[in-house]
Figure 1 (cartoon, chains in turn blue, orange):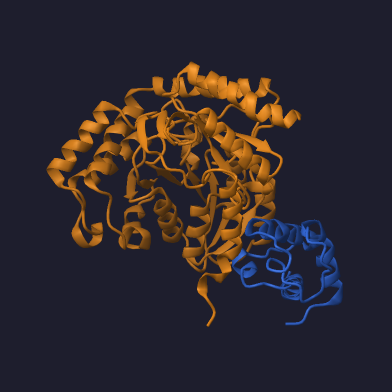
Figure 2 (figure 1 turned 180 degrees about the vertical axis):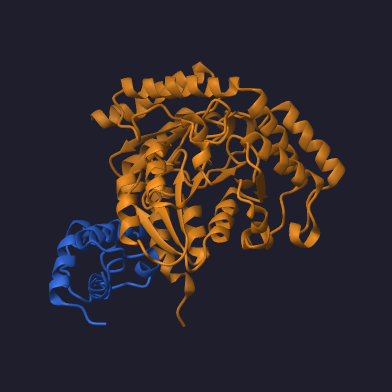
Length: 82
Length: 398
């Protein structure tokens, strides 16, 4: 699955408030591991993504999503489906 | 070779930082337990204000006697699951007593409260179903949901409108829908707005489970929990509860009126593949449940103590987890280091509370969490308030 640049940009914007490391975000950034975001904060962040795109991303899918581009691909697929 | 434990190095570092500041705040040793509200810790008599011993029932003479008799009559352990070894008469008696107490047709007991949630979530929902769970749900709910294989949708804490929105998004998908809320949330002490959730239930149609772990025995005119308190028991399909709080033992239960409820015994792995509760634990639970019904004054004392602590903290200007009187009273602190420092200072001064840190807390909060007991005296409560004034309020002001 490939993700659109537009979705990646929007996700980066939503992720910025959760990024306390100051690291620059790239499509390959691993949301939890690289940004030191704990499991609960990852779920809170995904809730913001869900509401922004008006889609549902079940937790089972979140647990298999690691990088920003992984998540963007999930978003694109679900936006299309909706 | 990759060392499997390498991934836990950051936890080890965090723990070492905590230890460097004093004692192990998340693994304290009680050298002796003197009463429901007192223990000897580090050679000092300490007020216990973080043990969820809401009814103060752990040293009740009748409960102890029931446990001793069961120990002598039925032995030390059951040595296996109820599926394999069979039930003891006591298990059935406890289930019948709980069903009576809860006014439900069926009740199944589990060996721990954690397993009750694992069992109920995984027994009720399967891979084709969806579980909608409150964002602040206890870990046992999250873990039970994972075990079920169901699709998991998390809604914003105590937000029925948010649940409504998510149910609408998933309209038309196959499978059943289970919504899970809690009577009292363990970290902040707030309650689910049940009436709002019941309204959403009427609109969308789903089965509703209330985890009354912290509210069973505590809330409601009969002590049956939040649904009893707000008069909405008929709208709750399934109840989960624990024996490790108001009942003062260990174990848990699931209850409901569904005609197929008993079938869950053969569909819940956390019930089927673990040893059943030991006779003494079942017997003390049985005696305690009878007391929850027969001694409503324990609830009155708990309410009065909770109100006193809440008012005391409020007058100190402390920032609390919720804005209503609750037996769980959490104080919000600034950061991890200062929270650990204050926790140590409170212990040194003779009061034990819980320390709660992210990710074990909602919204990245750092908490000093108190739980009130019916067995606390007003003098105990006043001492706790005074110590929080000395240790916590003074620092917050500094």
